[in-house]
Length: 436
Picture (cartoon, rainbow, N blue to C red):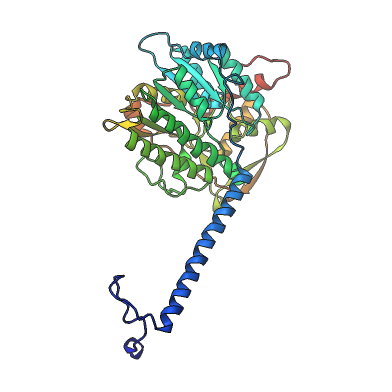
């Protein structure tokens, strides 16, 4: 109590600034001013140093920005515009015109072909990066060309290119699938995820909000946003603020950014949370794909288990079911309500789970592959590393069923049978044609 009653120079300082003019002759005031100045200098110096370190780290891991090219270089010109227009030409007045980003990717290829087959106008965009074998992407590109889909080679961060595409074609919809994928790769190259999943998405939204008419946007989020959520099955109403990986964090950031552009600019936006998509023309970095490859080569495959010998399971979803969900999302998307970057009234904003709602242990996936490949796998069971993977995913699809009519119909064994048939055909030296 004696300490509380002891007066000090600070006792007379009011809680509201400006109410007291201190005696300029007091030595303590001079010391206080010097100390405050030094403290502020130290704080700002620390912030500046942290900023410099961040910029250095980011620049060392981020891919170089897309160069600004002239229209006479790799894109632009009359012939190029004719190819763009021809690809985006729809076959009926009731059809839609869609820009598909990431068109040479796994999901992008299947969605583009499905849209083209039903008579919609489709234009692809892809940067053909080297995250996985670009030869597979080029093979998908040839498939798209045979289907009548032209894929423009370019990056979603290239504002000039995006602007040019929208000048040539009045897109009614954008199917945004371009992204830096993969959970584990984020630990090696975090900058690529920020560059593509955040900066690239913002660049696309900036363009979409400014054009007139504004397109409706459907884009790929991920089941990874559920992160450390332990409540299953995962519902769109569940918390998504505990990401377990940088990839998940960028997808969650994308959802928040999408909501912002919807709220401010009236863009109609639908987010789709994909659950472990697999099938023909799939990604080589996915477990089912490299398991098949290593089993056939007689290599040992690593099967992870959860803590305390728990089961690691995934809600594997066949590509055809995902495509149906994507097309339904496009068909039910309402028009954007803005014009030239100005919102006129509230616009549609939706988030849906697209899964199979039947989680399967990864060990069972291996057993099915053994049966289909007719080769016994050499398994090594290890504890799951702390690399961003989660032990369990399970989709609640009731909302997608109600609003999209989404109803997956392919079980894992049936889907893997189709994948293995394609895989053996694609990778066979004696059989060059794919088994699409």
